[in-house]
Length: 107
Image (cartoon, rainbow, N blue to C red; front, top):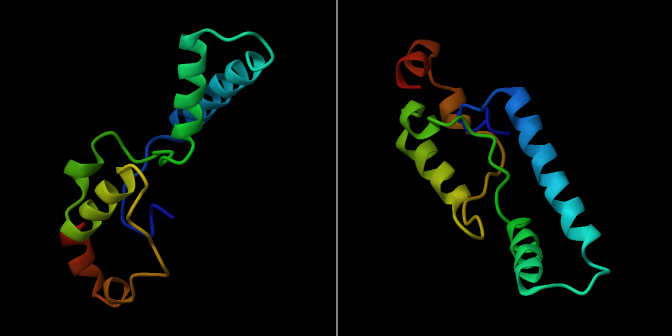
């Protein structure tokens, strides 16, 4: 999906590590659901549940500086917003039809 949007992604190992951290956090929140919870535990649980609607970002750390096309940069920024107002539907046909030499120069 990110390659279709011309957004560089992070290394596979780092993405997997982030997935495992998210899973571990969810397991900790789930473990505490049966106990009498403190305000801090309740806040952690609400934060975790609220974060599930946010983007699981696998974009490269320097993606914004690496992206040459403004539209692609704006798409990534929109995806990172709360509620993710940006959407992606289908392939970018005008970009695909551009000559290969132009694609290499522009991004």
